[in-house]
Image (cartoon, rainbow, N blue to C red; front, side, top):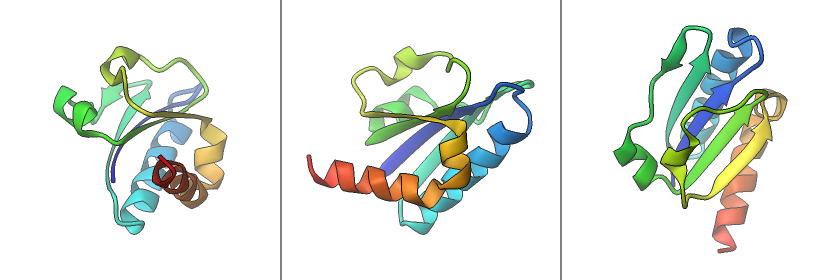
Length: 104
């Protein structure tokens, strides 16, 4: 599965980047390709390209503030969770997505 994710927290410092790493690691450990964009205080880093967005099977929004440029993911399956969910249970998040996608 190809996963893209965007993380953004209120302060835009620690949780944004910690959650990005946790999602990346959990997805790769489950055997998936994953790219995570961060929208923090230093701006957007590791920006998801239009090609990556188009190729994605699912988009994860892990955030506590608004995600910028959501139109890039129009028509994609979106999983929208508070940043705390991805922080505390990244493996469970990926497993839940796998189950949901397998049903379709």
